[in-house]
Length: 388
Image 1 (cartoon, one colour):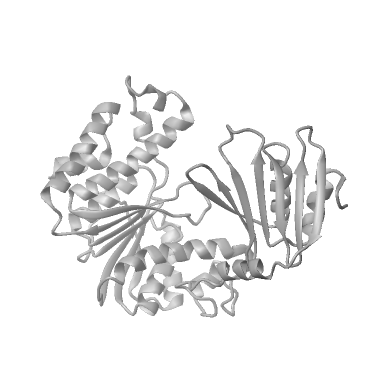
Image 2 (cartoon, rainbow, N blue to C red):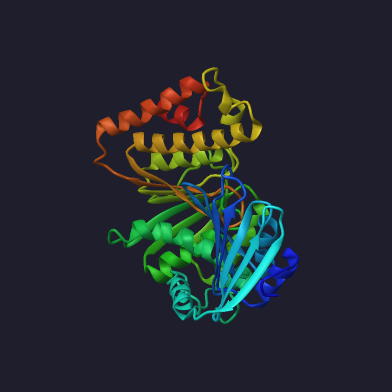
């Protein structure tokens, strides 16, 4: 097929047969296109595609069929050139403006490139290591009975580790021997069990942990699982986030997808208890979407999808600032959640008794200005202002 016109489908199928280790799709058909270049690299179990805009990069994991579809979708439609490298060849696909396809393969020594890719793909040292018999991960179908990651569950394995890493980043800053923890809206408690395992078995911290949910059947099954695993200081209770009474001094509060205002009630409870650590992944956020309006910035509210996303971002920004106002150091981090949804912001707040007054006052003033501009009345603001 060297240097002759053939179909695009043929060229891409031949490319994938050669097992490329790196692919670059370039030469935009129009300067107005947002994505300027796509780079695809072979990982241990999959390919990773990186789409580059002028200021950002977006990643997606693909199997071989997904790479083939991506190349076919992008070439001709958005790009006119593809360059790829295998262990011993360099491949190019070029399209003319009339979409005539040319394909070329030439021999090349790509050992240095292969070593670079291998170096980039060397196994990450995950906190939850493969080879350990972590019973909850086996029951979730993420580990085999031998402690190996199930291929189809590798993304979920990385996501769980990501949550644990975010917690570990804070806990490793000081020596901690004991933690009392509340997990609000624990649901089936996959993450609850893993956090408990990480703290007690890996960090060797003494833990008292309670998972709270509104579903009686879920609570029953979770308590049975805790007993099965021998997690004798982990229990589950039936109850509402709003107004829950904690039986001990709370050090840490976790929420994973507490829906809409439930996240606000959980954060408010955590603040009232003086919890040192708050790790919260919000879920659906309808409250401000139903309130938001603006004459000055109506372009942010006139399109439904923009309004929805903007309202969600404001909701979490307000939560972050109100936590700052109440004396916490706050980070809003990207977190790819366990159910592969767009809800990927994690709020990490750590109590700082030395928080400067002007920083706290500035945080709440920023919230007030946002509320005034868009006609908002956020639940967490009301809870805190009325209480304090």
